[in-house]
Length: 229
Image (cartoon, rainbow, N blue to C red):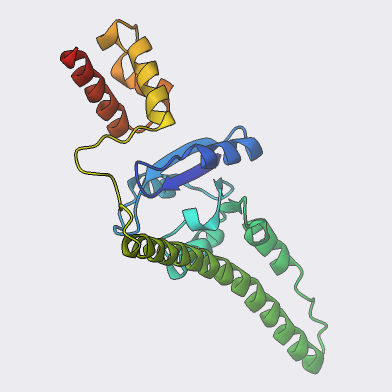
């Protein structure tokens, strides 16, 4: 089986890019999607998938950062799945795919039977394995660092804007109108049964391609607008 695992941190983020990237590379992949934040260790969809995996199965990630909360957890999980014979594929970091790691282990130098020569060969093999493992750890470390750097830049940007007297966040009582919200509302008015269409709420939500919370928020706003007319 080939699975594609996608994760976003908040319902407001779009998971479509990850799905699109994985489907482009692995059209037959069974997709598993999850909303999960670094403030909790609960990843029910991942845990369900983890229990299904068997030797020979493949899990595809858009990036190594989608696999774990941090570098230590990621490296440990990678090694466990590798040992179980599960194939891991990272579209943005192909150099640490398990296929590359397995090739590295196969390229170990054959012993000669000569005690002194074999001591050197065994030491060389250990170095090769160590370097392969370090590449994996470094990839997770880099992914974790990028997330931390992004958070830091965001905090600094907010503080700079605040000191400059700019409005941070939405003005209380004022609705934020975006192109996405306008398009979603038009779709809801056109297709939802509540407004004379033929689709249920869940079907309309899927058609809009938005999160459940956003869908009901837009629908509520539409009903409020109609009530005011």
